[in-house]
Image (cartoon, rainbow, N blue to C red; front, side, top):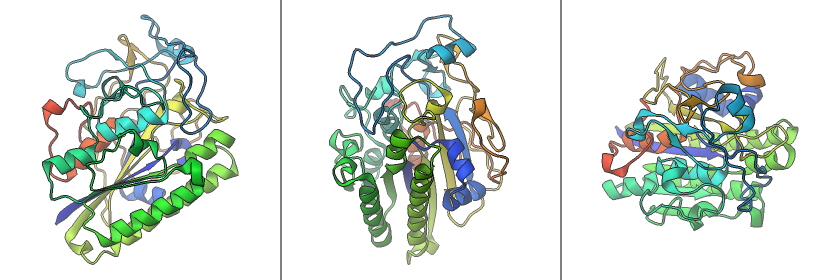
Length: 375
């Protein structure tokens, strides 16, 4: 069996809304696969929220936190910056990560497998990025195994323009959602990705869809427009899976699908801060035509984010199965989604997981913060 991986990113997708709206394809992957959430270990305290996709909040408007001794509920309400205390942080027990909960840092963390204090992207400006030192996981795959067919498709051109997903990737297809509208860009990205998945070797593929974020910025994540955007992206995901299953070589392939997001949104729309709604992210993992049947995708540190050794406020979602849970007012509903809970999967775990599925063990010299989830 030849292992294949598809990673799909849906920008600004709130997990509680995903559960409540029950999009059929994503719900099916959670039921047959595994899923879980974690809290981003960063956020900007008391600063203006990003109000549109890709907006760059002017430097100097931030009110960075980080005061020692702030703990629990005080940290959540005052918006202190958090730090990661994961074991994979290579011995660092209290790293303060200064970054906004924006798309730039989120997708850069997914791409590189390291947090913003390493890859250098702390907002949507991408200034001082360190992608030469910390390249994306598709580039690393190509470097280790040049025989692999890699491709990345985006409706947010900044991910290609700034090199978060670099030019060494076999195929890069980038569109500007601002210029041609996000629904049009997502549709064309989907068509290009479908063609690639149907007609090439397609060993490792990344697809970015952005309309959920745009709609949440404009109208919030609770209106019918957000529902429609989510169901549209869910249908696109279904098309990818149909194309994969129709591949003439599918019987000799073992496909794993990973779905994730970069950040959440406050109820009125926008992000950048430290609320649980903005910092909650998820990873869904599923093997096509297989039931993972209780697999615990562990491998990350179960402890919550910290600030100088004190817990950042809000519930610790790492290792928690959120079926029927209700973290700080988020309505996740009472539906049992059927899949086992992941062990607190983080954005930085996505790339290492994709590499491990292809038989590529991360090199300690890469300095990754993420670790492979046990799929």
